[in-house]
Image (tube, rainbow, N blue to C red; front, side, top):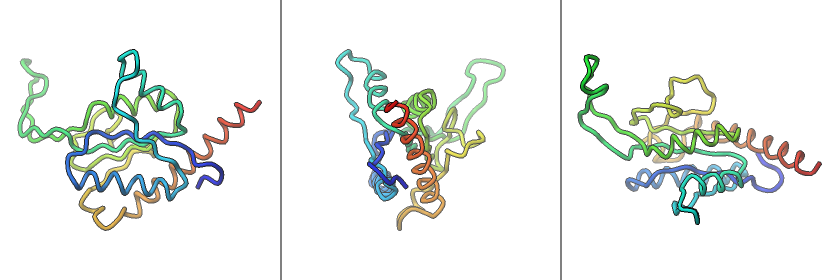
Length: 178
């Protein structure tokens, strides 16, 4: 837990698809606050130059950690992969998050910020959101399991993220004061 000033953390979310997703985001934001962090949900406007990445980077650089909350944005009942080749595969139903979550998670990783990625169990997760990658900062959740509050494993993940963020903030502030 952060003992001094609350460490600002960038919270990467897509558009809310419904009440369940909105409620889950609210639960995460509240848990981050209870852990001593100051969640920042960035504006989705463009920077003065018109470049969305410029605003995202500017917002992230003001923070000491990043939380990515991935939930379904698109649902495709059927699709194809590796189209028009001999390796084409017909896919069953797929639910995908916003591609911006991949971008924002990758930027956080490149900036070496503490990162917590929460992936809805319904998502076909690829890239940095893939739960198969060995990582202590990617966790799966079920919105339905969070109706009565966050399960202990998510509370523990947030507490561990808070500790990593507090440590990172102390190091960053100490290096700035030299």
